[in-house]
Image (cartoon, rainbow, N blue to C red; front, side, top):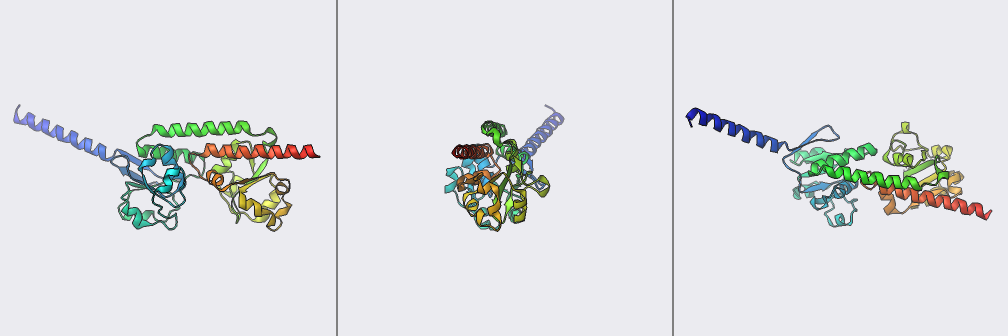
Length: 302
């Protein structure tokens, strides 16, 4: 081989090696909900999640073993309970997060520590899930991050199957009824544009809080009184104290026991926008079946 040919071959080999290295360096490039692009050379093996719905998504996508730390509220599946708890949105324990040497930290946009984590050299992926489309998009992004993109389709298909099964169980007499779903006693409600509101709509219900008020608006208590929803849903302790709120004893749904008071574990399931949304639809359907049964029993006693 002539010197010239050897030189050209060597240059071509070097260029190919550089291209492969560049491709490996840019193997993962994900745009998050800030509009920032996260770049990783390989799928992360050490993940910190600072939001329960993101923790659940990682596990549903088959990567629970990659989690090395979670926020204090992450409690499903059971195996994450043993992981280091690293605080919450407002008080995340940054030193402990750094000490865990995560390849990536998953957070919501409401977390106040994103800039500080990145300043310390950590990779951060910001994901928000306000409605069903956001949940699907987040699942796809996390599956891509994990290097298992096909898993997102599997999880979403299961959500749709479970939701369809729940729809089939809704008593016909309750379809079209107006629902007030409380997410905080102040009161904050799940509006029509929230992921909870979209699930209620799939089940054939009408939200007492219109979409123009936002996904999770804080309401004047008088608004609920004027709205007179047909059905009231809340976590069980909040539902129990509603009749003691000024004027709320006049809510016909409370008086006639057209209510869903969810145990705390089921309520957590309902208010987390993640891979268990189909199961959440089933929980609501169970309550609607119970309301219909109570109504039929009351008529039979007259």
